[in-house]
Image (cartoon, rainbow, N blue to C red; front, top):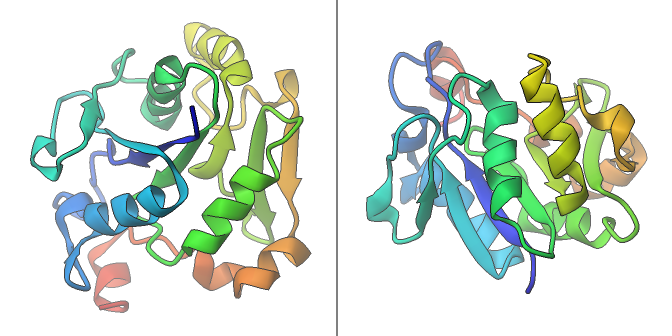
Length: 190
C-alpha cells in the first residue's frame, strides 16, 4: 500500500477565532486545499479532526484523536496508528503554500528513515512531514510521559532533515511555510 496523507485539522483555531479549516481559499476552503494536495501525492487521504469528529462531508475518512488533549502530537499518534506498512504524510491545513512537488519530495526522501522533516531558518516544520510506522512506539511513549512537543520523539527515531538548500528548490521557505493563524494572517493572504 502506498503512502497515506493526513490533513491535520484538529486545532482549536483559538487565535483565528473561528474554524481555520473552513476558511475560504481559492475556490474551496483551507481544508479542501490540503486534501487536494495530499490526494495528488498519496494513495489514501484522511482528516485528523482533533477531539471530535468533524468534516465528514468532505468524502474522506475522519479520525478522532486517540488520546484527548495531546495536541498536535496526539494527532500524529492517531495517524500513525492507522498506518499498516507505508509512511504517513502529515500536512497542517494552515500551510496553504506548500506545493504538491514538495510533498512528493518528502515522501521520496523517506527511504531508510522513520521521519522526513523540513528544516529551515524558521525551525523545523513537523506538520509538513513524513512519519513512518517506526515512529509509533516513540510517539506513544512521549505522550504517556506528558512530552507533547512535536520534536520530543525525534531522538528515538531516524530523522532525515530536509535542508534549507533542498527546500529552496521549491521556493522561498519563508513563503512555503507561512502559517495562517490569525485574522491578520488570513487577511494578508486572500
